[in-house]
Image (cartoon, rainbow, N blue to C red; front, side, top):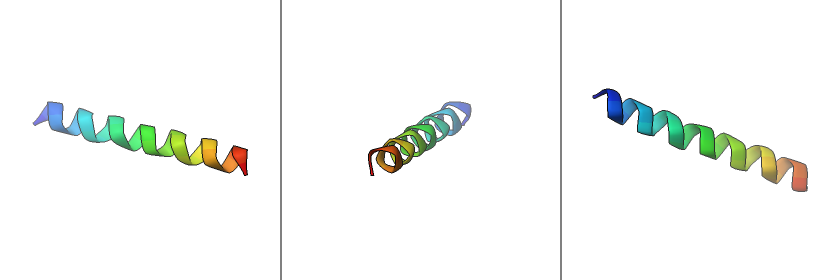
Length: 26
């Protein structure tokens, strides 16, 4: 259960990072 939550948080952080990168590029 904890591992699943950790994985989800990790994916969320990656998505956020990607969004920020996209915003900075545009």
